[in-house]
Length: 206
Image (cartoon, rainbow, N blue to C red; front, top):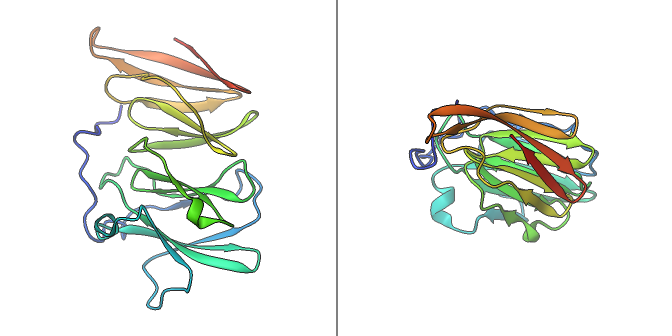
C-alpha cells in the first residue's frame, strides 16, 4: 500500500523535477504529434510557449518542460509540478484521441491538445500515483489515493467513487477491467476491488 496520502504530500520545491523519473509512453495509442521532454527550460523560449496552470507561483516550484510538434507547428508546454513524492507520476502519454495527450508532473494531470494548446484542461483529481491503459474500450486510466479516473478522447470519461479510505495498491489492468486493493479503516482490513469498464461507464465489483 502507498504510504503517502494527499494530506501528507509535500508540494514540490525548486528543482524537484531534476532527479525525478520521467516516462514517455508513445506506443499506447496512435497519435499525430511528437513530444520531447526537456531536462530544463530552454535558454531562449520558443515564440509559442504556454504555462499550465496560469499561475507563476506554481511553476516556480518546478515544472515539466515538453516540446510539442504537431504538423508544421510547434510549442513549448510548461506544466507546473505538483507534489514532491516518489509515489506520484511524471511523464507524457498519448490518449485515444490522435491529437491529444496527457502530461503528468508530480501528480498533477493536464489534458492537452497538440494542435490547440490553449484548450488544455487541468484535471482536478490529484495526486496521480498510477497510470495504465485499456484498448477496448479505449481509455487512459489514472489512480489517485482513493479513486480511478478514466480519460477518453474528449477528456475525463468517468471517475469511480472512493475505493479505499487510505491508499490503493496492486493496481493492474486485465482485459476490460482494472483491479487492485483498497483499505477499509472501519474493519481495519484490505479488500479487493474490480472496476469493469464499459462503453459508457463502469461497474464496480468487490
